[in-house]
Image 1 (cartoon, one colour):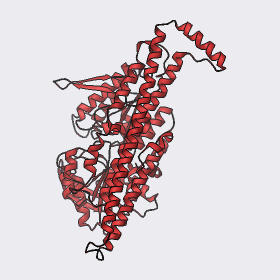
Image 2 (image 1 turned 180 degrees about the vertical axis):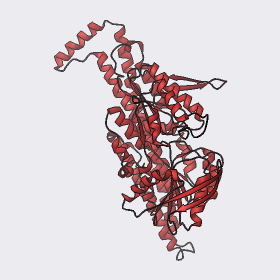
Image 3 (image 1 turned 180 degrees about the horizontal axis):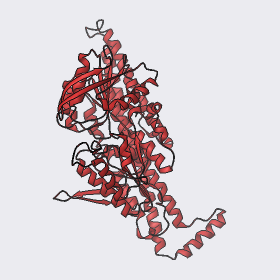
Image 4 (image 1 turned 60 degrees about the vertical axis):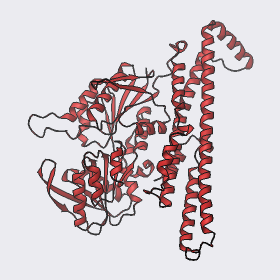
Length: 545
């Protein structure tokens, strides 16, 4: 993956020297790995232990871990320094504003005007200065949130690389799991930033600021639901916007109680909430978040729904059934949502279930996966649709690979169902003998069809079988089926969080992030720019995080 470039593009340039030196650590790992390889080749000459290669190698490992410690100390020191500065600024603003309440404002402004005139600079009222300072602090808190997330990712990925290059992955000697736990207790991962956001909100909402201008107007606000907090955290970090907390409490009977903990009057609100498992709970939470934002006088409310639940019920396929996908759309509109942003809807016509006053942006994760598979050195790649209904999706994926100058062909599996949920027989249209196959679908539920298709492709002579699906639901026995079938790797997006119990069963699942894709969409929606560029297949390399 290309995290080094991602880090370089996302970091605050003025703080560049305070970030984790990711490339330096990466080069150190490569150096140790090369020394390990060369010492392995010369192992016969030093088999009696008289050679110094082992000692030198041990010293390199020690140097690496000392370098990691120094980088951690550097990041922690800068983080605490910035928080102390922000806390001091907020305290000064609070004290200055409070003192103005106890004095005559006009007299204070007259004195400030006289001082500014003598100094030859334009006069800016104190209230306006405080508003400007608070906006600057808010932006800095967002940048600091991004700083925390990027460094956490950098240290975590470095230790995973170390395990990989030292052949420690999935062994008892692996370092990454223990290191990730340690990161949670590091100062830069502490709750001090949350406390500082609370202090900012208390100063901002203090009585002497009420009614003194509307700096909130069309400011971006990110409100995460409880369905996918990791994706919301990533988006906040990439956008450099602090998360606006929304408390979600559950009554004993299961009712959901929502309260947005910050003033969002006149703000441009983005609610991040996929309607994944538990679908009904997450759907109701999304509806109530939209309602709460609308009743709090937000200027615009956009629902960012990476996974749209009930999407498979998009038509009346038998008697006396609802069109649930359309009904969910109507509920969202009834709550007052202004715009909806989704990723890979089950079918495109769901966009038409919303009225013309509620535009829907249906983004595609395919370009990100294309760039990922290009790194796999595929041999005679074949894109496979697992059923006739997915041919359009597979064809789009095929065209993306062709645009990367790869010689690709298409195959389709035609399945006959014995009964609901049970595949009776499968037939292959196309040739896969001696080829690497990529099965492309929009979602993986219980993985029954996927695993049967992978095994079938193997019987037809396929070399390696991969799978890509945007939404990895992995319900029921999905993890066990994937681990025991012919699939080499299953690639999914992080539109739905990967549950720990699935990760414990199989190591074949690889998650790619749609964070940069949604980041681009949210920025474009907020600024009123076109998002058409995000639909192009040649942008995957820039979106692969």
